[in-house]
Image (cartoon, rainbow, N blue to C red; front, side):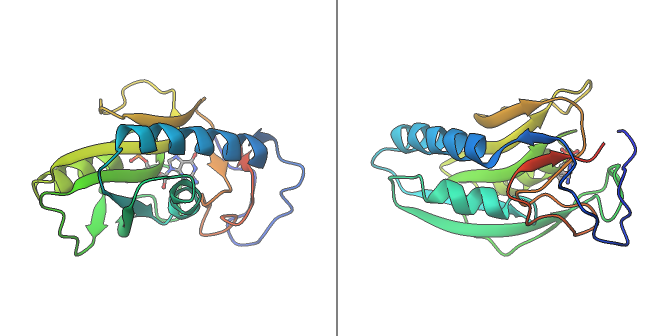
Length: 182
Ligand code: 5GP
């Protein structure tokens, strides 16, 4: 990945950074995703598993666009810590019981895919009735872990993005748009 312009130790003025996806574009696309998912799961109940922390705003907005009954869960996945390159080790923390349920993982970014692969395999081992992945962003990069991602919000170039739940060193999650840091 490219270098970061911002100091991880201090909150920086981000108003001059490039907006990659505006709050309006996010709202419109998430509405479409909600409609598609509601149609696909008609007459079913869906157990959504948000991947913390980056996916928390996406999940909160997505569920308000669903027209089907659902239950909301979270798991914690960590690999990046305060750095911009993945350590390759993904730690999971949860106490979910999803046997026999229709489950959807809700993630912020499909980058290398290591996180989603780890989450998917972990949840698959619980024998859900079905298991799908919904990611807000998917980066166009070489050598991703191949995954069957059923729902994708936006495909983006290989840029480091913050905002709308995504952080850099735990900052900038509150920015309403998705903004490029590099
Ligand atoms: P993967 O395991 O697919 O390489 O990485 C997934 C995780 O890395 C995401 O859930 C996210 O936390 C982090 N990540 C990957 N790319 C970015 C990015 O551009 N910005 C931010 N803030 N986090 C990213």
